[in-house]
Every structure is written in structure tokens, then in C-alpha cells.
Image 1 (cartoon, one colour):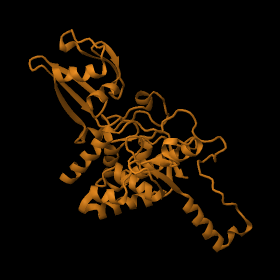
Image 2 (cartoon, helix red, strand yellow):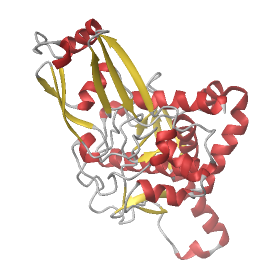
Image 3 (cartoon, helix red, strand yellow):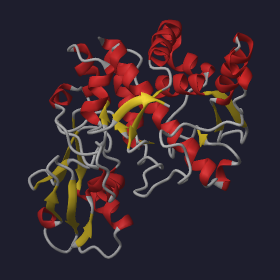
Image 4 (cartoon, one colour):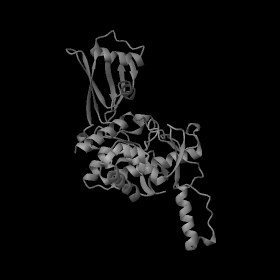
Length: 350
């Protein structure tokens, strides 16, 4: 149990500081002549010989080899070409505690694979010069995280072999499965822990997605990272705000500095005032390095301290990892988990 809590806490902290997924765009991101099911076309041309065992085996090998992804190592500037299987394994080990149940790991594998597919197609349509010819980067500040085998060994220590095998089984058991909506890979957003109900993409990023809408995730309230209270002295609190809001007015009593005007149905602060300056909960979260934008602010005049209490960990959109683990432990399989958190999406092979 101590190991579970420790690893869960580390991953929760990492997800809390990772920004919104770079893939979220409201418009179509695939070329209009791309296959309707999102499958990547290869240069293999069918011939009359494809029915022979030798030719079929060769074709399968070519297709397998073609299912690769180029990953930019942002620390060295080198581009690694990996099989999709190895990339997804590294992403699962980096993004979800391997202590979680197998069904949760399978759900994460499908989400990670979907993320990679969408990013790969995005780069083939409109390459980003900063990626230097790669499809994606291992810079977790901009993309989903990825562990090389060496990094995973360092992170998991003596438990690496067992955890790696567990994650590999999850990846292999979901081989070539991804999430689609209208025959395109979805924006497979995920986070550590919701505030008891996930958030919509529209609230967090300003763009709606029919499969990224609020759903109940009550098990999240039992997560060790569900509640966090931060205490700031009046001086500390004002200093942080003044740095980002130079025009804010702090001449009024400290208890009047903050006014939360609007929250979403999931609890995310969508509009507030700080020293008379309007900002979003996401802005406030960034200023104070909070776990989430689902928070309350209380001023204690006797202590001259501000108490900021957050619920959940991360942006709250899409798959809740803690919720996925709870669902898996309660008997749900990975398909049920994914279709719960990604409303209306379809799971199929690409």
C-alpha cells in the first residue's frame, strides 16, 4: 500500500504540472482524402501474388515495420524511430503508475496509442519545424510523457522487471486498438484525479468535443491526491498576484481581494477577480502552482493567512486515471472504462 501511494503521488504531481494536450483542435486534422477509418496508407501495392504464404508474410512484415513513430529526444535533439508498440509501452510506464490494475493500464495504453496516432497524422499533414522531422517529442511539458527503458529502470528500481511486464501485457492485449469519433482518432485527454466529476474540454480549453464532456467519477474522492490545502501568508499571496497582475488593487481589506464569480458544474473556477482584475481559475492555478483549477479560497483574518483548497489533480478532462483504476478493481474492463470517460467514442483497430 505504501508503494502504491508513493508512486501514485509522484505521477499525480507530474500530471498536475503538465499543460493541456497540444493536440486539441476543434477542426478536422486529417487530410480530406485520408482513409475514413484513420488507417495510415503505405506504399505497398496489392498484387495477384498477395494470396501466397510468402508474399502475405512479407506484406505483414512491411505493415508492421511501417507502424512506427518518430520521437524527438528534446534533451539531445536526436530523433528516435520506434515501433508503435515500444513507444506506447514507454508512454504507459511514464504516464500511469504500473501499480494500477491491468484493466486501467490497458485503458491507458489505448489512450496513449490514440494520442500518438493523432499526433503522427497531424505532423504528416502539417509538420512542426520544432519537431525536426519527428512526429512527437518526449518533452512532457508539451506532449504525453515517454520513458526509455533506461529511464523506466531508474524510476521503478527493483520493481522494474515486474512492472514492465505488466505494462507490456496491457499494451499487447490492446494491440492496434484506438479511440475514434467520426472515424478520426480522438483527443485522448487524461488526468490523475477529477474532483468527483470530470470536466468538459470546452471549459478548460475553450473548444468543445462531444466525447470530452463531464461524467461522474465518484471514486476519485477517495484518492490520496483528491484534496490539498495550501496556506499562504498575506504577504506571500499578494506578492504572487502582483507579479502576474501589476494593475491589481490591494488597497481594500485582504478578505476582499478574491472573488470567485463562476464555477462549472464540475467545480472548475471559470471566472474570478483578484484585486479587481478578472482571470480564470486556470490562470490562478498557474500563478499558485495548484494541483487543479477546482478550488476555494478562504482568508483567515486572525491568522492573516489565505487557505487555498483544491479538489482533484490535473485539468480534469477525459480519462481519470484514479477513477479508471477504481473501475477496474470493481470489475470493469478497459472498454467499459474508456467508453465511460470518452462519451460516444468508438474503440476499434486502426
